[in-house]
Amino acid sequence: ETEKIKYLFLVGDIIAGVGNYPNQERDLKIKDIEEQFTGLSHLLCKIRKDIKIIISPGNHDGVRLMEPQPLLNERYAWSIYDLKNVILTGNPSYVNMGSTENFQGFDVLTYHGASFHYYANSISKLIKENALKKSPDKIMTYLLKNRHLAPSHSSVQYFPSAEDNLIIKRVPDIFVSAHTHKSSVSYYNNILMISTSSWESKTPFQERMGNEPDFCKVPMLNLKTRAVKILDFE
Image (cartoon, rainbow, N blue to C red; front, top):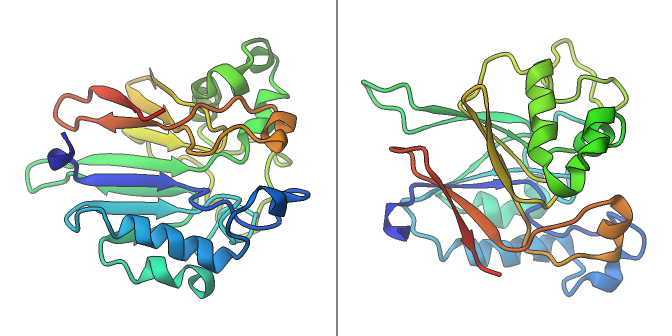
């Protein structure tokens, strides 16, 4: 199966970062953000060079917390910039994959998901469904219905600009998120929604935030059949 893989999406929090929560240094083996990126680049170097690696930032990756977030900071992530098969995007982003002369391809909307906690704790239906711990795809559905990734002004820190870059202007084929560390796959109006898990075990900070993470669950999408298979490395 690995021989057929063409794209790999890393949707934020690709490193642990430094100083993201009180006393985080106690949990870190590598306490320097530049060295964390260098360690990641050593792992990514082992991936076949014909696989496109699409990387967008999250709240742990040394970029501003205000959304939309820019590309990874080259000052710290220079080792990632040196990888030839890596495509860096902001957060959120639209990425098209698989397009040919006769096929328009698949539009992928990636969003790390910083607004998810706000809606999981504010919308009565999502509170009842315990969406944050059990089904983050319900939060994704809510955002798709509102055609906005943070429809309430106070749900995220927002970088002011003339154009609202969090509006979902065109309907994606695939919507990918992270942040909750919870794995889920479902559909809304024929839009495939994928919430990714994490490689990090449950920390006391995640427990305080209300996260119930899944470990090492990697969704693999077949672009011909649109079937999703979860690879379980736990």
